[in-house]
Image 1 (tube, rainbow, N blue to C red):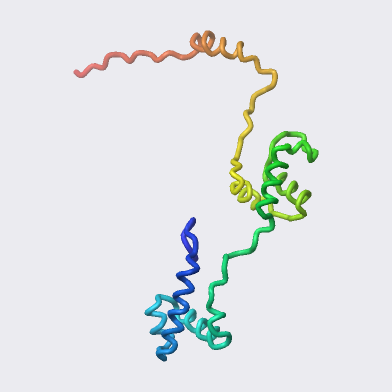
Image 2 (tube, rainbow, N blue to C red):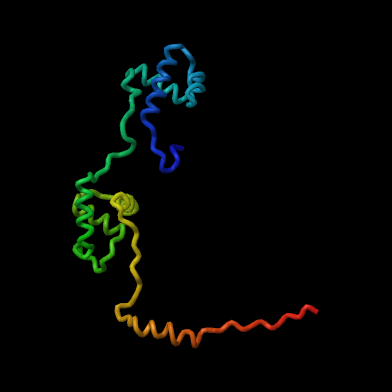
Length: 170
């Protein structure tokens, strides 16, 4: 049901189709015939007819955007980016890593808007923030010793490929 992912609804075309139905209402065609011509269901034509009879053309005009209005406007999103750059330690978290739960907490504290952590990633993607994985390396890591081990010790202990014995074809 609905449009394929990434395909926006064409509200102008939908409105034209509804007003096309109004023209067909004037010709006294039944709902089935109008539905066939406009490639919609009988129930849809019936609903359009009832709305048109009750409220006229206003009922069939396009409604504007689909879905709920966003709680954060563009100014709020700009402020959110500034707050994200300050880091999660400012909120009392021990590690310098943002996750959806922490960002949801930041939004609720700063803007008094509650978002489910599962939805926060959408907001972060709108802000061009991406998932980052921390590099899991110890602070005590000695790069010189690691490099020496890789280039000297590893070749010594690595298993060598044994040459295959000549196969006889007799």
